[in-house]
Image 1 (tube, one colour):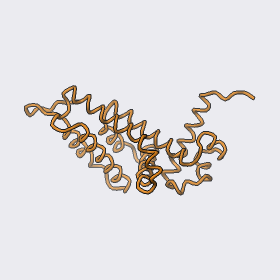
Image 2 (tube, one colour):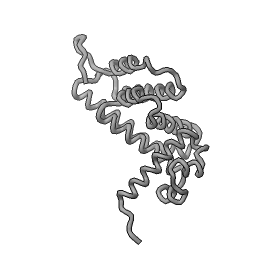
Image 3 (cartoon, rainbow, N blue to C red):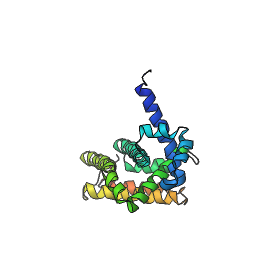
Image 4 (cartoon, rainbow, N blue to C red):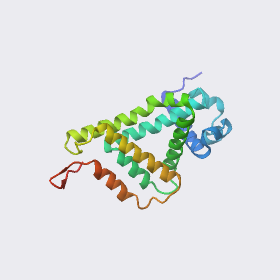
Length: 199
């Protein structure tokens, strides 16, 4: 029997994650039955669970994938850029809406499932660490205000992100939120003699 290439395995794993993202976003964790996962991915349960031990492992892999994507954006452009990307996404575009669904489902499970909370803690730290490192680099470059601890600024930006996610998930208008993000960004920048230092 011919060996399956790593590229094929990676492509199959990506297919499962993409389908599962849509399924979890639409039906939530409990509603994403195996049958619905099969329909969303176009694969059998055997194919899905060959790559992932169970539904929770699949969901954790999906949430970790989203956190990694966000951490990459944060490392290059900052957490405010993640928020700007959410606002800039065209209506009906799959990924941002699906990301919101995944993010909300993670939040719900963190509140209701202590075991999931424990497993998720180490994964969520990657985003916090990427934000902290980005802010530290900005501080060293003289672009970040130096009167507030980086940990506090990190927590502030994460809280704003959570608020934006909730706002968008409730379907509230987002057309006028760019100036709000400008204010958030401005609030963490360093100013010298009344002149803004850009990042």
